[in-house]
Length: 504
Image 1 (cartoon, one colour):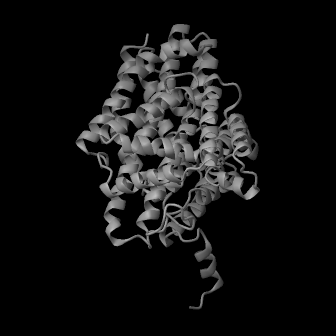
Image 2: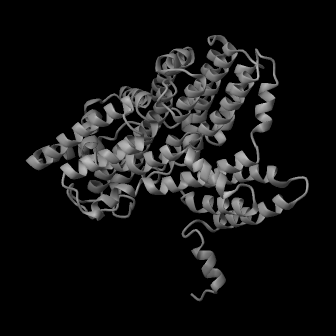
Image 3: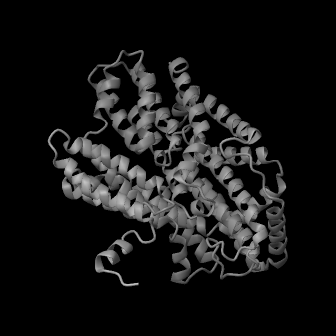
């Protein structure tokens, strides 16, 4: 079929994305400069429009990876003057630790996948109660996130999910466990009788991953090292590890309890996409896989598992005691595992970075949007509104404002802006030290808890949305929002009540 060059450009633009999606992105790119140059609208309105457009690209992540459309919008924003390259670079420098974490830690987890699949296969097959299994995933994610890092924990959970899915999909497609040439993203070779079971298995994995993702938020808010903004707030407030925990506890402990109860209720009531059981055929395949792996495990394989287990212990120790930046610890476990397990060819090592680098690139694009928020002062009206209120109303409104803004942008950035403003108010003598401490608790819990409402609210959620497992189990932006909704309501309501009544 003959095509003009213009048609060829349009077909090439954003690849296999739907034509309507391509036209919407082109419309965004045309409209933004017009709005920017229109008197009465200008940079402020264009900046907010850019945020909405970027969220749209995230919501359509299963149609087109957000890096390309989001990146085009970010490039245009810089070209028309919404942000400068220097501000973008400043945002990248401020978040260099997160970037290094993604590049190296996620790759380090890749080399532990044999151990993770071995351990969690035992758990999955051993715990037959779905509510109990879900609670176990949530508690484990919360505990690890409190002392390690939410992104690291999410990387582990993603690796487990991909491992389970690939094993079942391979066998359901008529292949052997040891077959290497299988595309588990293609359902074309799947036997007809397995299609219903696959859909049920996808729903099963979706629920486990979402419980774990929310678990990272429940645990991450509790400690000084749980989330990046926690450390930032603690430095400004002058709190050590114990003081941070005790000041947050009146909010974080009740939220943790109701969050875990919510996990059980959702599984028992089978609402919001939860409560789906593991299909018997999938369980049988996983049991056969576990038996097969046990029978064929050689001395070399056992040695590799031992190395991975020792490395996992080192990882937990290193992160818990913060002996180095997280990314550098990740690089260390890559070196240790590849050296001791004989992974010495460049192309073997390269596979480990395939999962992390696209998301790292997307995160840098996200920092460009944050730079626009910063340069155009898009959040200033919210900040001044809250700090102009009566002192007694400020903690509640600060929690709400931080929650709303974190859900649509970046919780680390929102926390940075607000903690800086209330510190300036303290230094100016406008508020007392006691009131500053209360507001700091509101900022921390406000940026951590309601932000589970959307995938862009927390880096761990965004990582899950754009990971290799999301398209396999049909975990879209909208589905994540719906599945997170009951958690969002419960955690936000209890958190707000606690901030108002129990923080003094």
